[in-house]
Length: 539
Image 1 (cartoon, rainbow, N blue to C red):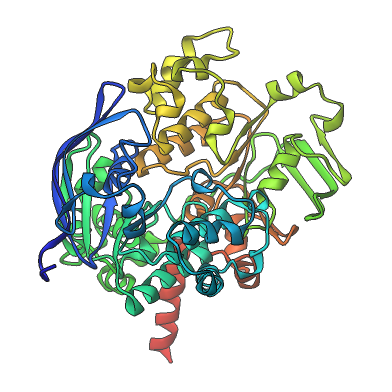
Image 2: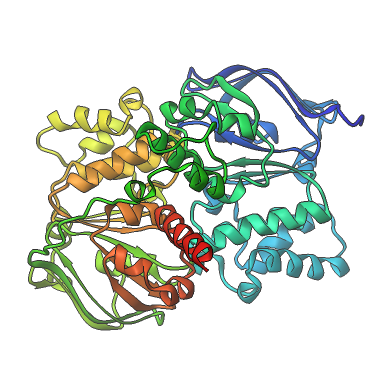
């Protein structure tokens, strides 16, 4: 292969599903060992394109592909079954969909066995891959007992163990705690230095990746190529166009746009690094202002006293008040989803009591309980029960007039007649939230409410939740979301609550932040950096 000959070449590529095009007439090339972002709004076809690149589509679905994809000068159709998967590895947006074995060790071994890796070499390869992602301690663990973030790490380990020439990561940090997200990028960076490979990243959280990525390929809402070029240009002069399209930007770029619009950023171009932003700010005090929230709490609607569960949760005591917006945060495997399922009555308690609206949770009839308490699962597919998006939202409603407005709010009106499982992962999340929003419950519990969303749809979801009269209890790894929307934060660590209070109070607790593997929101990072610089100058 010549140095500048494309490793992957796409010509006039189109993909249609159920008689509608996801995208068509896509043409681009990727050079060997290049690293690129594949960006676009929710539903633009990013994941579909990724699955086409390693021949998963159209074989795995009832779709039609047109055009041509070449890998190292050879048409994808000329590869034998399974041959391409060793060369182009992919980590799915939903990691559970690629597991087929019982334990962590067996899952990593399964891929190695398929490609006839000698048994004498297998143990070392398994251990190395698990060490790369920080799962050594879980080697013998049964997969279904892992947290969502740990499953994401396992899916990555399975791909890394095969040492492919191309790695495609589809939302690799979506279920990871903030520190694990940073460590994942550091791991990929180190691996590419020791054994170079081509990297394609579909991602919404861009900041950690920005130093590693050298090119951006951006799709618009119709699946057409909006931008194809270097990172500096994409997040510089082209950034306002991406923002309008609802595509996530690095936080420092987003901050630069806001500051420029408000007239106190005087840099010649949008900043890509914190130092550039700070040097261009003329009025930093105005930039760091945050609207104060009304923290007056009303009467409690759910009370937890001395809760123990599954041998993991220990002596949990908390209160949820009427209309309160609560965030539950903590590192992967700390017990967040387990706690939320206990609060919803899905899991039994070992010890302790939960009272909801003054009645023990165990005394509620199931039908009555779920008219007052809603739950949005981490995996949205777990709660779909009809064959149509419209009917999914309308299910159980006596008045259907609200359905159309909810479809519009969640940007699902074009998909009203589609099957829920035909939606993109981000659209499925919006549908799962929509099915709960149409009911006026006293309490809505959501596991990662903005998972898989572009900037515009994430804002829409959170705006609707923020205006909701009932209480909202959300599990999230997104510290920006916590900073902007939460009245109260609970921090869970190894099954114990180690903090409860306002977000602003949490940001001042460095020991808690470090223990729970969290990160400060960008606003506070910037503020702290400014203070550090002022102290340095004064010294």
